[in-house]
Image (cartoon, rainbow, N blue to C red; front, side):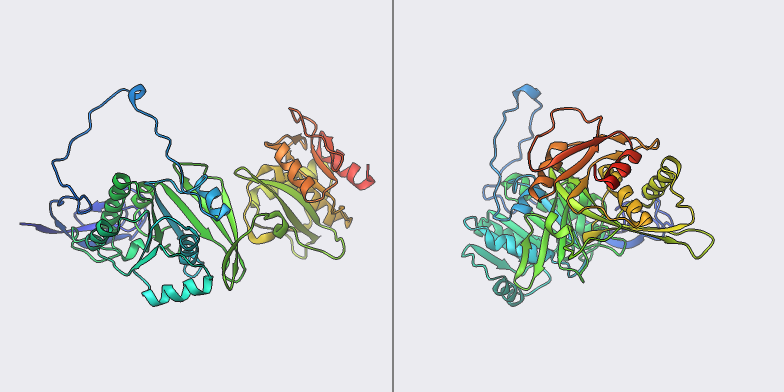
Amino acid sequence: MAKSKTTFFCQNCGHNSPKWLGKCPSCNEWNTFVEELVETVKHPADVWKKNQGPRISPKPRLLDEVPMEDVPKINCSDNEFNRVLGGGIVPGSLVLIGGEPGIGKSTLLLQIALQLIGPKILYISGEESEQQIKLRAERLNFKNPNLYLLPETNTQQIFKHLVDLEPDLIIIDSIQTLYSDQIDSGPGSVSQIRECTVELMRYAKESGVPIFLVGHITKEGSIAGPKVLEHLVDTVLQFEGDRNLIYRILRTTKNRFGSTSELGIYEMLSEGLRPVENPSEILLSPREEQSNGIAIGTLMEGNRPLLIEIQSLVTPTNYGTAQRTATGFDAKRLNMLLAVLEKRGNYKLGTQDVFLNITGGIKVDDPALDLAACMSIVSSFKDKQISNTICFAAEVGLGGELRTVTRLDARIAEAEKLGFTEIWISKFAKGNLPKSPKIEIKQAGNIVEVIRKVESGK
C-alpha cells in the first residue's frame, strides 16, 4: 500500500526537508519552503513500451568500443531557430523554452510546428482549448496536415495517446500544468514538475522523439520550478523582449548539442513571428542627417557578426556628482573607459554627465565595442560628428592601448556587406586580414591616435 507523507520543498532549487526552514541550506534563499503531500509509490512499467519485459541493465564497456552513430538533425524552415538549436532539432532531445507571459512562446512553437511539413507532430496544451489554438493557427496562415492537438494534463493519459499516435515531434504547453499520478500533489508544485520532466525525459531518450516544453518564469526572470528542471533538459532557450516593441530575441542559456552564445531575432507581426535574417539592419538607426555622439561598433553573437549603433550624450552636470548611466552596456566598463579617456586622452569628463545607450534594446558584453563607445563619448563631448561610413572593432586597455579582438575577418566582411568604407582595428592584430577595394582597414596602437586621425579625416 502506498505511504503518504508531508515534505517541505524549496521552490527555488527543489531541496526537500522534513520540516520547514526559513533559509534554504542549498541555495541560501529565504522563505522559499512550501509544504507538499508526497505519496510514495513504486513506479509501474513504462506505459509507452508495447512489449513489456524484464529490464536489462547495460554493462560497462570501453570508450573505444562505443559505436558512433551519425543521427541527422531535423531541419526547420526557420533558420533563426535552427541556428539557436545548433543546426536543427536533435532526435530524442528535451528542449525547454521560457519567457514572460505574452511574449510569444506558444506562437513561436506553433509556428515551427505548422511550418515543419512531413513529420507527425503532437501539440499538447494544458492551458488553451483546441479552438484557441485553431484561431492562432489561422492567424499564422500556415497549414500542416500532420499536426495533432491534445488538450490533456495527465502524463499517464498522454503516454497512452503516444502509444497509439507514435508522433515524430511533441510540443507541451506548459510543463507547469502537467501532473503525474505517481505524486500526490497539485500541478505546478516542485515534486510534480520534477516527476513529469523525468517521465518525459525517459520517453524522449528511449523513443528518440524530440520534446519541446514551455516553461513559465518567475518575477525575477528565472524559469519557475526547481533548478533541477534546467539540469534535466538538454537545451534551455530564453525568449525575451519588450512587449511594447516588435522585436524578440531567442537566446540559448544551455545547449548540449551546440553553442550557448547563439541568438535568433524575430519581428512580431500581426501574422506571426518573422525571422530577421540580417539583424544589423534593424540595429542601425536610419538617419536623415548625421549627429554627434553616434559611433558604430562590431559585435559577435556566437558565430554571427552584428553591427550595432552606440549613442552617447555628454552634458555638464548640474549637481555635485556627475551621473553615469548606461542602457544595454556594462556600467562598470563605462566608468573604466571614462577613466581611460580622462587619464590618457586628457578629456575632463569628471564634471560631465554621461549617458550611453545601445540601440535595439539588446544587452552587449563584447569588449570589441570599447573603441566605438569611446569614440561615441568623445564625439558628444567635442560636439563633432563621426562619419556614418566608419565603424570600429577593438578593445581598449587601461593604458589607452588598442587590443585585438576575435573573428576580425567576419566583422570586416559584415561591415563591407553593409556599405561601410572604413573600419578601425588594433595594429597588433595577427593573421591575414581580408583585402577588399570596398572597405579600408585602418590600424592604430592607442585610443588617442584613433581620435586624432578620425577628426582629421586621415
